[in-house]
Amino acid sequence: MKYIKNDDEVFGGKVKDYWWRIEFQNRGSPHLHMVFWIEDHPEFNTEEGKFLLDRNCCCKMPTEEEDPELHEFVKKCQIHRHTQTCTKNNTAVRCRFNFPREECDETRIVSHSSDDFLRNGGRICLLKCRKKDAWVNNYHPKLLRLWTGNMDIQPCGANEAIAYYIAKYQSKAEPKEIVSGIVQAIQQIQHEASDISRKLFKICMKILHERQVLAAECAYRLCHILLRDSSRSCIFLNTRKPEQRYRVLQFNKNGHAIGYYSNIFERYEKRPLHYSDYNFQNMSLTEFAMLFVPFYTKKASETEESIDHDSYEEQPNVRRSLITLSDDSKMVVRNVPAVGRVPYFIASSDPENFFHSLLVQYMPYRSETELLEGFDSAKDAFLARENRLIENGINSLKTPSTKSMLLKFWSSQKL
Image (cartoon, rainbow, N blue to C red; front, side):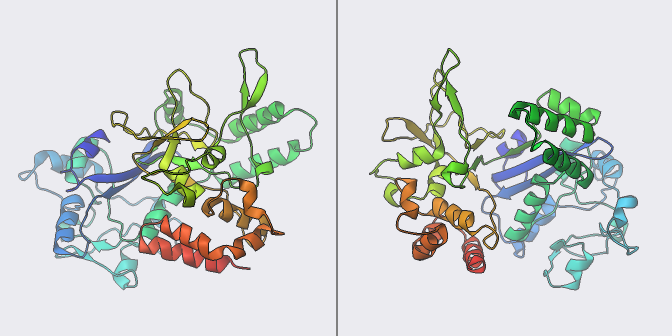
């Protein structure tokens, strides 16, 4: 990963963002799912874009005379052989990975609505492919030499496809039989008189009993080897109503509870009144959480209950700007804006939490009680401020396609 980030020649441009996750197959072997965003990458349907495609995605079998080392790697790692998974969830005889590949004189981009797109297994480009390369899977010549193992590399032509890919593998669930067993265990202990620690212990034991963990995954976890990483940290905003949120207790040296640790909601309410670089008065909670992170000295660190502690570490050697809150605590400006997560509510079945969540995320406030003052419900408060909410939500987004998706989402959720 360091090599890829530090060498712009690998993909022909600077790696702006990345995400990866290690997944373990049924037989126990780990494999990697990864996405890269290349800065200022040309459109794939331009001459420059096609040149980089041919440079980064290849399905050619080099001869021993051309490159003996690469020839051996491709022969050993990149030749497709049919298995049962080739026809998984598909009654058709044809391989779902589209092997053998059709001969193609030059690399070309295909439309999502074209027959070529469907025949190509949903891939947006047809790589230059000779008849003798029909069984060679896509690879990156330079990375194959370093990885020395099987890979499949392809361009992604739409924001929706990237979101689908990450969502699919980031949140990939356990097999249904495992999930159903855990759900049943939770239902059984809900009404037990035992304390919460005992209930959690029973759930943990149920998970250990139901889930099969093979040797490779055990080794990864025991050695604390990273199983996922991203160029951006992730912050969870628990946008339920205050009485439904959890809090982290703070204890003194004698073990007595003395209060709660601060959370992102309290820090947001204490944001500065005036600041030259930021419009804090009209800044929403979502934007605030994405831009700032609590600042602690090494001697005085505290638990941050709203942060998902992923493996990501922001650049430690870069000088960071600080802001001072009204209680004199400090926050650091992130080098890279974080990605926000919120609970999922459905407007039709849970309108109160759905609209309250939108208010908390996008409506600027100094006290959360302001959001519902003068209104009978969160829905009424939302509809009364709808135009301002949309403006705040849209202004925090950069790309036209994402803005359009948000507008469509809000329109579809109106009751």
